[in-house]
Image 1 (tube, rainbow over the protein chains, first blue to last red):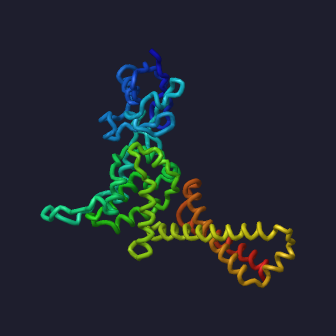
Image 2: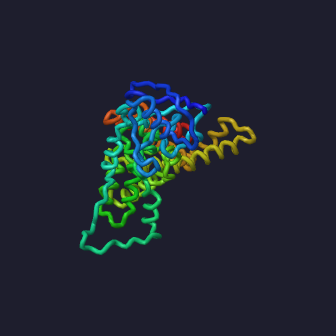
Length: 237
Length: 112
């Protein structure tokens, strides 16, 4: 049986990589490798996962320099000469080993007004939204985000400017800007345009390239740029 | 900066980029075409001096540069130097004024 040489990040920002040898298995995922290390070689290894099937978004790590869901990444696809390098997500503070502190990531969702602001009550009829309507179609294209942080870890602008809201928060705001039931459009457009918001995006498209759900936060951010510009010209910003 | 401020800068940079795309194309196209048969500095000046058309064209070109460049430098200053706040705004306004002055001085030199 062949053996994988796996370098795993240990400690906090000032930590280092530690080498482990892990038996190769058929259909082995990177998460399988990390789990093997924790169960058989180093019980103190810190990492996160929950569903193992690409639904929860908690197992994202940096694999050979690229942010990925480890549960949906086969070793065969990423190992180079039998070697793997596994680190925590970039652009987030490291708590320990492979676990990052995601507070700033989710705080930015709140700063971008990522909360739905209802305009109806439970006594009103359910809203009827035509699936083909342009707003619904735009929201559909961006709605499947599960908040894994891969886009945020891949974004150059986040790396250069820690105030930048980032692709996921702006993508979320774009779904709500297109939700006809939402009542906070003006406040949300102000929130995403102010400071290091949508206009700070340089359209490098790393988020779109790396998104495991194949969403395009770049397209959502471009939509916010157009929507905020239109609102400014109409005197509504 | 406020939502209005950021969005205004974004529109200004996109609009000035559109103007620059046109101006650069005309500038290079005319240059390549005009020097085909060989052209001296004196012959160029003979065509540009007193020309309101060229004065207006290059005046607009210079204005677009003075708008576009400082907005781009602002992003570079924030992201690479960590420079932000009032001092950056003052420096960029001064740089815009410098570009405008130098550019208009050059336009004046060939059309006046």
